[in-house]
Image (cartoon, rainbow, N blue to C red):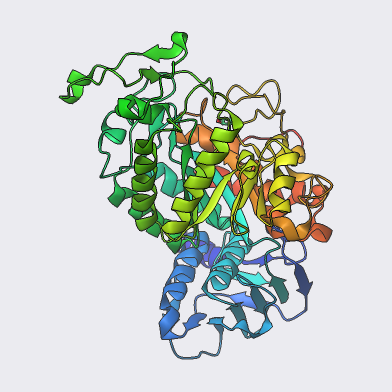
Length: 520
Ligand code: TNX
């Protein structure tokens, strides 16, 4: 009797049909178009994943996702099948790159990408449809999803200089970014408190300059091999790494290592910590600066009038360009408060020339627009609209990172116990309810490359801290960057985000339970 009862339980459990609604989907970013039909598809164990051999990679990826979300183990094959999820690439329908379509009919589901990135995003959307589904017979509502990005550049920045984060944390973040169709990860690789990427021609940058962080911790750095590992991990997730070496200010970590670059700057007394060079088995350098363990900004600079500076900058740009397949190299350029404007402009123009020499496109914080920019250069708007306008006047594009809306290091409200508040408190609805094209008169759609959310890490020390400040706000920024304005609606977003909260809980991802959302 007991055996029979258990058997009955098992069959009735596995036979239970769970339904996935397209009408009430929780997809973030919201797709351009979702239409429903009555031709529902039953996803069960006999369904095959069919895919042309050249793109087997995607078939296996979908197989893994279906297995992880539902437990179903589907076969991947190159031949057609009577009940199939078919994956393919076909550019004919797409208005822009990275577009995709998902068509759900009773005998098959088609996931069609306009290119590989588009197919990858079709899979990400499909994954969101299955998230939280518990069962091996899944009735997916018939219909059609058509989707493509509003902006070609959708980014997040992680500051690994103020606090260092190991490779595993960055990879884990990349996994989350891909889900939200973020396609650029900007790494802030150097600042006053630490130099985080190996430069073979200036080795002390990392041995000396990397061994510090805010609060005076051990710091750390990526070897060039580790950096390249990150680049390829990101590429598999259709994410381009944008490396930033912040210059000519925010350079105390370089001055820690090479006194020859130091024009004689002073590190603020309260936060200066002398370096014990003997720990590294090295002779000390009397011109080098002490470590900066605090969070003050604006006190450091390279020596604008020394040719050694430009040898240094060229070496750094050459080595970074050589290990960066993406098109951009970010030169920082923010908050160089102790340098006269004409010197600053001179430096930025020379740095831009060097970036161009090594085949990359220059990006810089909005201050760089005081210099003569190439029309291909990009100014990252964070604080001053007038700087963005200077860039636009020169024919350059603007990357939108207004601190008051997109800064992930800003506290949610006065009770948030990490983060800063100089720009604003940024609740989830503040991060959501704005549009890049209406933020400032004079910044128009055609001037905007995309949207990026920076996470500065003066107060962020762990993976859990990163997650808490990033989620759910990054999902809001991702929707602004991907979805057309006419589809964006706070009420609907707050309903959809609650489903993502359940997924984050299941996956052990830390997030802020905004009181503005009814979390399920
Ligand atoms: C301003 S935004 C900075 C960073 C700080 C950040 C803290 C920008 C280009 N510069 O150096 O980390 O504020 O929110």
